[in-house]
Length: 148
Image (cartoon, one colour):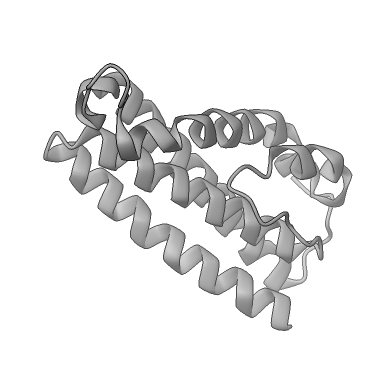
């Protein structure tokens, strides 16, 4: 039950970041929106790993572990693990540039992160948060692990 409480806390934090990422996107703060989206994906996926009893790595990208333990998830979630892992990997790679820009080229974060990249990041964050929240709901309801 403690793992479920941790997962719930992670998903609450992820939801707050998703809302803030959407607001940042509306304000044309593309780099900030991307960074918040990355954090949302990271927390959501770490919650999913906690839900199935897997200790996650203490780094931003959990894609490798997610793929390794794919079979621990219900089939409906397994069907999306590859795309969730790709989102995690891509956003983790963009995390640094969304914070600092390209210092060598003297470009600010918002000069490096496009509107399209920020929009895509928010979509990935929304999908990860929704799926991981649904996983938590299913597990709490005691449904069989390979339904849907």
